[in-house]
Image 1 (tube, rainbow, N blue to C red):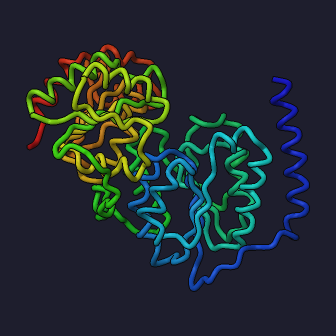
Image 2: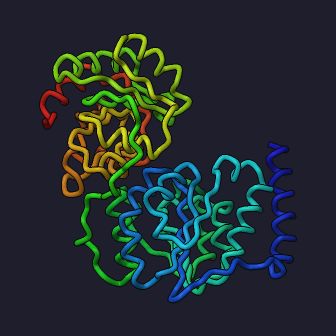
Image 3: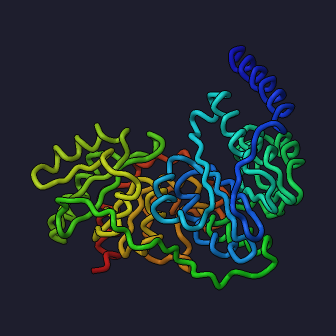
Length: 385
């Protein structure tokens, strides 16, 4: 606790001197014709996927767009969206929150952007002073964000950081699907209804194909950002065996570097012919893996956002109901091939409103309450050839 306080004091002192000397920091020079816009989007991959479809709507009014994003999805931006931005800055979230020298370096990069016409921070759950220092440091004629909720910062800090912005868009704190919330933000920002924007997110054709893949396969993405949301290897194996025998599909295992041990265990159970790519693909390559799979079974809600963006026909998501109604499930009017499986306690609740109220801001339900047979039966009923 004492160490944390000392770090905060040192950061405050360094930031104070930075603010004093920032007029002497040389600005970057851009060739800009028309208005400039900065988008601050430092959250996860799924959040960016749910927002990126709206960026072209801004280009008529703001042809010069600068993105400040999360380095975790840097490859996705460079592969698919480089043409949308005149400049991109990516921050390492772990370092940004723990290393105040690195945080100052990001603030310097943000300051060097120079004066812009508009800055937007379209994250409903704003992240508090350290992230919003970025908004504070950028010179902009207008700064617009959500008033938002208190998921990521206490009530008092939300009111304090509100002073950074020229306008805060008000919205009910009721949980709402994130794609629709983004659409509402842009509609207010642009002063026009953009409900006719195609609700299915679309990525360009992915040419980052991997060699030596089976011609027809199911992709099992076993990763989850929290241990309590990881479904057991034994149950994944049962589902994989069913898919292999019922649909004559090979099995490809996907996941991040932290999933390699569990992926190795699953590959060993499934035996010959199983392809284990956990921790061995970039995000762009993972997009290609998803795009060419026949079935996607995922233990993480972030990866299915890419599958939806690619209009995948067979998406099966095993979830403990975390952020129910905000990131999962997809409303049918947004995408209708997203099939989610939740613990019985959630499903047995009387109404959708009750489920959202209980689990929209988090869930402590045990994902192991979901049986392999439940997933298998859903695949039987929903699989599209």
